[in-house]
Amino acid sequence: MDVMLSCTRKASGHIGTQFARVRRLHSVKLAGCWTRERCLLRSSSFSVSRAYGVRYTPTRHYSVVDSTQGNQDKMDEGVNSPADCSGSEGNAPSKADGKRPAIKDFVDTCKEVEEHIVFDRHKYSKHVKANLLSLGASKIADVFGALDCLNLSKAKSRDAPSMSMEEFLTAISDLSYVFYVSTTAGIGVSTEHLLNYLETLHSALLDLLGEKTKADSGSDSSLKISCHSFGYTEYGHTNFVEALSKSVAILLLSACEAALVSNVSKYADALLHESIRETFLKLSAGSCINAVAFIHAMSLGKSDGALDVSLETLCDVVDALSTKETTMGLPDLFYCKLWLTCVIAHHPSLTDRLSPAARSFVNNVVMLEHIGETVGTIDEYHAPLCTHLRKENLPVELDSVTLEPFVFSVLSYSKMELYVADIADNYFDGSSRSSKREWFNWRRMVAELNGWKVVEVQL
Image (tube, rainbow, N blue to C red; front, side, top):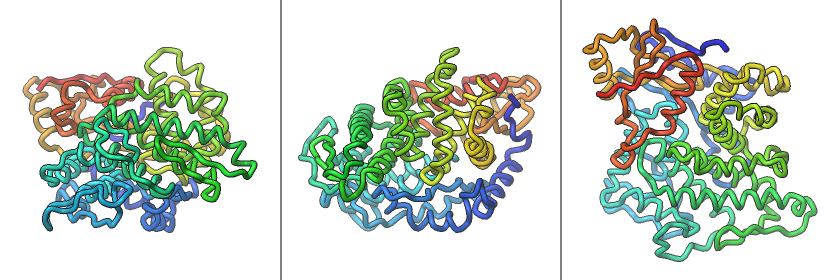
C-alpha cells in the first residue's frame, strides 16, 4: 500500500493549504453530492431533520481554523435555541442571570460543534469546556440529569416525562450529541449512563428491524422503549428506523471516544449478524452503518487474521454506504476513512472486490484530503514537546506531518519516527489522565500500518 503521507511541509503552510481546501469544499462537486446548493440546504434543515428522523442532507462541515488570529468562528457568541433540551418542559434550569448560560445552551453548543470537533479537537474541546464551566454550580452530571428522558440514570430521582414519539427522537438526539462532544473533548462522563442508553436504544433498534414484516403488512405497529410505548404506523417504519439509528450511531462513537470499544463491540457484531444484516444495511442511516463497521473493523484489526473472516461483510458495508451518503456527514467520513485505511492496509485487494459505485465512493469521497484533522497551532502542548526533543538532540526535521487521516505533531523523517507526548493534556480532564485514550491507539495503528514508528516522549 502506498504510504499515506500527505505533507512534508511546515505547519503554517499546511494550515493555509487546509484552509484553502475548506473553501473549495463548498464549491466543488464531490462524487455528485457535496454541491454548494446542498451545503446551503444542510445549514437550514439540520436540527429539524435529524431530530425527527426525516431523510436529510447532513450539515456537518469541515472545521476552519484561522491559526494566526485564533478565531473561534464566531462560536464565542453562543447559541440561542428555544429547544427544550430535556424533551419536556421544566427539566432544564433557567438562567440564573443574563450572563450565565442555561443547560439547554450547553446542549445547543454541543449540537453546533459536533460537526467540527473531530477535525480540530484542541480548539473545540477548549470551547466546550469553557462553556461547561460557565454553568457555574451545574456540572456535566446535571446536564445529563436534565436530558435523562428515559430515566436511566443511577439516581432516578424523578419519573420519566411523558413524550410523543417526535419529542422522544428529539430528546435522544440531544442526549447523544452531548455524550459525543463531551467524550471527544475529553470531558469525563458516566460510563454506566452512556452504556445504559446505548444498550436500551440498540435493543430497540434490533426490535424495530425485526418488526419489518409486520410493518410491511400495514397493521398498527408500536415499539416499547424503557417505560414508553410509541406507535409509529403513521410516522412510518423506515423513518423510525433511520431516526433511531442516527442516535445509536452517535452513542457508539461516543463510546469509542471514551475508550469503550471492548464494551460495545458486541452491539456492532449483533447488527452485522447474518440474520439481520441485510435489513440493517437497507434501512439504517449511513452514519449508523459506518459506526458499526468502524467498531467491528477496528476491533478485529488488533488480532492477526481476524479481518479475513469479515472481509465479505465489510465489502457489503461499503456497498451499502455508497447509497447512504445523504445520511452521513463529514465526521462520519472521517471515521470511515480511518477504518478503511486500516482494512485496506491488511487487504489491498479490498477495493477490487467492491462494486463500481462503492469503489467510486471510497476513492472520490472517503479518501479525499478534506477528510482529516487540522494541524492547528504550535501551542502549549506542542511547544514543550518540540523543546524537549531539541534538548535531547533528536533529529526533528519538520513541525508537523499528516498521516491520513490523523495529524501528528513532530517527526524525524529520516528515521520514520513520530513523536507524541505521553499524554495530550489538551484532550484530557482530571478524571481521564490515568489511561491512554482509545483514539491514540488508533493513531498508532494507522502510523504503524504505514511503516512509521510512534515514540512516546515523557515531558
